[in-house]
Length: 73
Length: 468
Image (cartoon, rainbow over all chains, first blue to last red):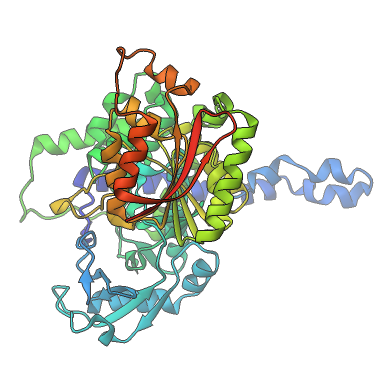
């Protein structure tokens, strides 16, 4: 890791920043791919409204739609 | 005449220059390359249109009047920025102002990564407020994303944004003296001493403070190391840097200062004026402001900002000062809710105003050096200045006269209930200069009294005075 910034990030801080970036990056990937994987696993949730055509609101709210929200919120 | 801004020397690729009529930024060849990358991306227009970035345009090199040796590698490009009406510093902001500045810093950093750019630092001195709206002013902070680096501004963000916010949110410790005490902010090894074992379990405290301090101590113990030793290769992807900033954003956006949210410690709720006095004051202030039409008004001791708002109807800009953090916080929240860009609320104690800080004491300017007001409101203030802070009446008036400001001042007589309360714990005859006759005599030595009005209660007198 070569640092050429005008600001000295501090060796300990740069190491911590690299580790935290790794953790946060992995977390973001898990959130993105985890949500996709979950959607695939629970494929019937999507087709449910069309299947019964009645209980639309109950089946469309969903646990996975909250998982899909952007990480910021 | 072109003068390099004394607070803008740290980045060798970008330097702010102030001329008589413009705020310029000189760029080195490297800085110009980074500017080209920003200008070529859709980010520049988006941020400027959203009010997140100061409007900036390229101007001719000649604008520098030949001052092209400001940067070690020379100056090849010049930008002109829109002027910020009044410069303020984080040690004058409220908790929510610092948090909003932190969120802006992070939002810009996150958006930059998507365009192959990154912010090279993370300091609140790169953010200014236009009324209650934060704007990023350091266009020179954007650079092409450095290959493989982690978030370069992480340490600076912790020291200048995160720790001050954590102090206020978790410990109710005002961050202002810490920020004023060190221009670089709070070191991790100092920050951790403030937190109890229980605090270290709170979100963000362990990772960003406890662990950070531990690593810092270890690095300090092992010394500077061997400059020729091979460096460890650690390649951090831009997406991971973005995820790091996103995770910091989640942490910062959830920080709350409970005292600031629940209390309105404003004087207005506990004041001793009658409604008639209040109405008469409103008419007086409204008439003076309408006649003066000042470009800049300072409201010293603004409380809930009622008179700042009145003055703002006829002023271009108003800076509203009060020493009570919770009061200014409440004012900021209400101004922010209404999208006010005219009134800038600041935490400041008139008896101990912001000094010059940093290299040669010039990096951060004193309050008075940042532009004296055309009109100063000093309503329900002089008794606190004179009796509580023991500043002689004559010296206060001399200070205003030196600023060259027109003064709208209220003098509560010694019969006023608040004055009596302030004098109650003092010895008989204390603050002898606090007397209506003496006040008027000292005022007349320095100002022309253009208007004088006794309020209906008979305890207070208003003056409009212009420096001789």
